[in-house]
Length: 250
Image (cartoon, rainbow, N blue to C red):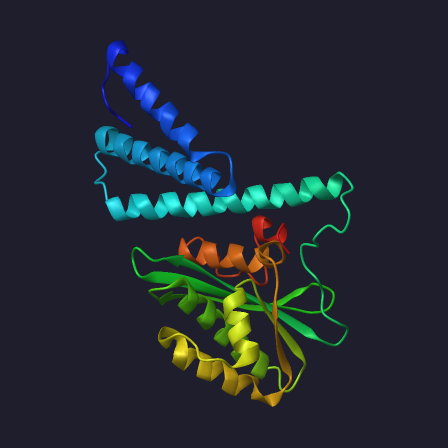
């Protein structure tokens, strides 16, 4: 972490770190906590070096946001790897990365990436046909205070795109189970997304739009686009000329 310690001082530090790591355990929550600790330490170390050697000012909020983003990307990569390993090992009923819609039906995948420390986020909407071809898409940055707001805005963009298809049958998929439950049940939504949910219900009232929950692994492409948009790293022509990383998610 940047402290200058002699060999005598390092002994207690090693013991404390060892006890801390041991106390986390080996369950899922313990591994996630350890992952957060590692990425936060790494980002603090990098920011410290940038400040000392390159005289770059340190923004604590930026350091925390970067650590959380890197942690999320790492966990997603681990999830994808575990699914791929299970598939290659011949595990029964592997989860497909993307399920195409029925012939003559469109599918829209949507997702949101958030930087809640700065009150902002990005949403992505991808339109694909029954062959899996990327036909159209929308990605934009928005102000938001909760992840649910971002997911709701993404679904609203998806409904707007579905309405532009002039009555075609469209499946809207999201990996946010709570939001999909609200879309199909028309229950009372949280106050921060009431207006957005009313827009969604209004645009879906034609009956040609259906809502469906999907696992994160099946929504990788939309997540990649939203994350890239949040980092200002999304090419302008990402629909017509998808980057290699996006092609790998489609």
